Length: 531
Image 1 (cartoon, rainbow, N blue to C red):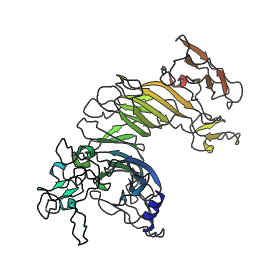
Image 2: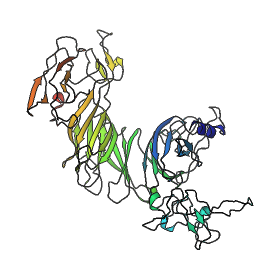
Image 3: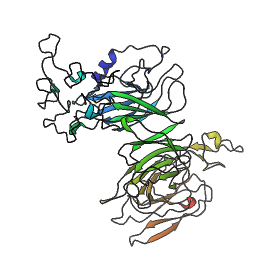
């Protein structure tokens, strides 16, 4: 792989930093490729990666979001544990100028936005005279077919074996015995999967594309800006041209600081819809999917403060995909239960998380034993910085200056928060909390003023926020299945000290992850300490 990348880079002119003119040139509705890049090459400050079979040959390829250059590079799997840049070159995802060098692509989602047009040329498979190769209509509204044989000229490729400048021998790249183009038959025959062996040419819907290569992965890319110095973010759509190249479609603006994009069929019409969390204005943009990689008018969904992470799943088991959004600043989850036609504009329910938890990433899936009708939700919280020691201990901060005691300048620092992972299980009424695993990053980090009980280990750890913390209670399971309560003891010394006690060993058979807890008020909430 290293040799391939060096060869690809060798022929690129490296320009001085001041000669960084405009980088992407064509409109979003056409294929866009950069004229210049900040640091030319197949990989340039990558910030996101995705794997999918972009050239539809049965092997997964890679898509790299180059944050610095504002491009997407497809690396084609060479089937020998190496990858090489796609011959189509990188695809631009926003203009770059001297004062704004990149649109900043930082996240990607892979999906098939237009299965009815696998090559993204705007002509449906059933009407395309070259359905597996990009072959758009010309100015006359027709695909080019000079000899009128019903096969587009783009697909009429033969090998020139006698070196006379004219192709004369059919090509069979996938070795399945079916030539990619066979003019010897009338009408001429095309391989319905030219890069993937398909000797039987199975095509149940008779659209000219073989069943084994119907999936043509497209990309949705989130950029921090719209390029050219515009501060607002954007969601950009790139369709697959059927062979690993990318074809542009209109982009969609977002507010400042776009977050997670979710692609799922929320309307039930069989087409992927699009949601993007926008943390700067505490909303979620919802765009219904249409044909050919196009999305409809934006509907705004109200979310909590600092909407950032998002994930879809059928949380209540009614057969319709719902949406969950992580509100980092509000320490909450916004749950939008889908009635079957679309998402509501306000949360169906809001789940309050422990203070200062800062949820940022959501994952969904069925974590329970089969049969499991409900999608579960995993919440990854980053934790927000808080003051340690001093009169402001336990309060949120951005820097040490926010925590300094004027009377004692040396006391009070701003420390990183406590990260956590929490599981919510799906139910008929939506996600409900299960036990969470939580680890304090270091001894002087802030922790809630209540016990943190571990169902996976034998320890209970707590810490008071002041020199004499209020008493709080927590619950653990006993071997008899009953609940036993134990109270936290107030600390009599510095708040920096941690106190530990040891519980009996967890009884055999008690699950470590799916041990139910009962949510209480924020000041006495129960959580679980990671091992």
